[in-house]
Length: 312
Image 1: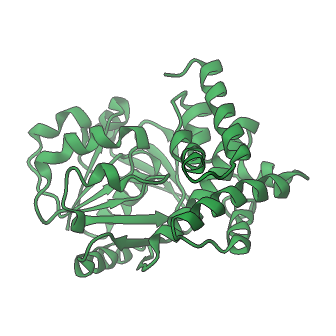
Image 2: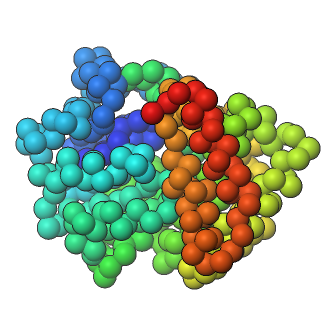
């Protein structure tokens, strides 16, 4: 299958590498010039569960998409939320009426942007529990295990099932879901706690989870997400969500991992996606008349941290 990884950071590099190793024709597209240049010069270097491997994958800067001779069967989106519209504009020459677009972005509501570029039947929303980290241009750390749930938004389940097969053949553990919105909200709860809290507290997930106040803070944030999800007919099993979050604290698995928002702001001095995670809950809370004080405070704290650090 011809696959575009649109947003080839840590997670995009993981998916690109695994799909490439499974025999697919994969290209990487990203806006980070140093990252793209390093991959083209020396290959993508990955610490893959303790083994260092280097794979040659074609990588392109987002501004060069007009000159790429490639027709995509599948696009997997891993951009930052605020970069989504620009990426969709850039890759449009490589899309056809049959191109499937799988959105694996953090946050809520991205289909409203994607439907401006591809038929609604071609949009797949997904949720993934894989993790990854960037160690420098062209260099990533891939560890642990994960899975993907996805669902077609229209009436093209057959094509979605084909995407599931391709992903699973690359050991990405994909499955079709009939309730992806619930899965997305469940993942959003993980991001809405681990991302902002670890970023503000300058710690990894285990460090936060081992504090005496972790459970209380997480429960309050999850309660706000669950209240909004119910309004959108996406039921959350709160006990299950809390149990999932607690698995993030395990030092023997992913507890030593710094979430993507930490990597963006603290490590790489980039703006965060807080407005599309906790901030989205705040906006929806105002719409539905639901109080969201914890999400509001955490959103404000992250924006304050962005401003203190002078990122733009």
